[in-house]
Image 1 (cartoon, helix red, strand yellow):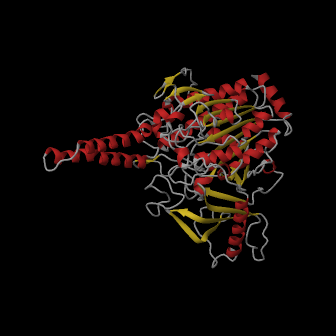
Image 2 (spheres, one colour):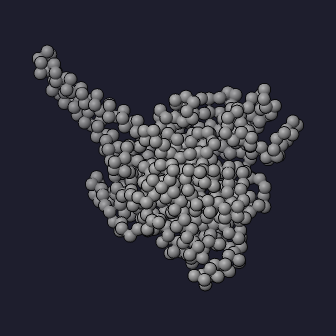
Image 3 (spheres, one colour):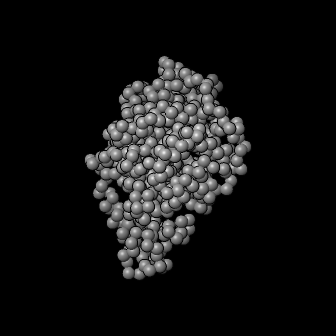
Length: 586
């Protein structure tokens, strides 16, 4: 151990920016920015993530490109707004991919950071959640599979965790639609019985063909939707290793341990060459399955227990980096794909995260709580420990940042919306390179953020040198009114049940991060000038958009039996090829 520490120290001394580091990316699922101690939470314990923050750089205005998982992850991997790749939805119902047997996904012509680094000699692995599609035209073509997007190795869920994945869990996928479908089935099924009454009572004659027709109609209607929704756990909740299905349905209670085992093995396997490990947690999405030793561990119920188990898993990954003398030569990054899900409830129990002081949550296009996420970078000997940066940054920035430190070349045939963060992280720059950030809800532009680095107006002496303005053109309608969420529908709408603002709502995020006091021409002399600047930026941004195949079209999002991954003979799918050798909990 002494020799190991000695060599680790020597290795760290000579680690420079010019050497290609290992890269470990840690992404939580639906974690609120206020769920970590280092971001102000005092009801859960997250010592390992807090350690990352104390030993690295913490971003306090780190922003997802979308408030839903699929478009946010598409932007993260490609460095581009999801609308550019067709990964933004025009519908309120399907704003994330809903079926593994669907035909939508991250287009094969998109270049991910994994593919860039793969070409630079990195060994690349994805462990955990994918949720960016699987197949295009046939069950096994796997055109959207992680291995076709730059990863050498994949182990995890090609979809993602749902309450439906738990045999005893309440339906989560399209819950309200399913209730309507059951009611419709009952009403249609009632028709043939009602037609039998006058026939048996001999009031008037009803042809048997008519009765059989409505009976057949009821049966076909039922099978048309129950063949998918009735087997959600079997169709969506599967575990894969590369192209092979390991478990169908997945044993959700063992998933976290299996993923951790695979992540640690990946680091051990490729510790002697530069590697990229993207660990995409199933935590902290419902149904919040935690090991027995973590149940009741926190002060915040099941959700807090799940956060603390995730933190323990982060600690195990950091431990193996320390043990293998890799810490000083590894960039570790921690974030979440979007804000906490406020509407996730079980009776009166909150199952979603806490977004701190910020308004809104998951699914809301522009309110801070849905898009402001944790952002922590640790790279010893390169990044100064304990730094806090409040400049606007984006998950899309990871793409050009990794390209820069890995020696990659950014694609020149497309717009890359992210910016290289290394000058900011290293302290060589004091301001973010982003001037405008555009916050979409599906395909609809709801909000624009302007990072006004230098005040160019005559009357602005009372403003900071880097004011951040934020304008809302559209906001969701909360239900019940004044609650701050859309509890009636389970998630807020992007169109239809929304409020359009003319003039738009304007906030100075620098002074009002809670977005509590809208500015207007009476209390803000720069109101008209700021709005005019924003509108000009929107016009310029829209000029850069080009049509892309719509991955969330009705056809792409419906379940197709011929695309359904199946271990066995369809429709009798099911297997368990995984062993039971699991890491030990503390």
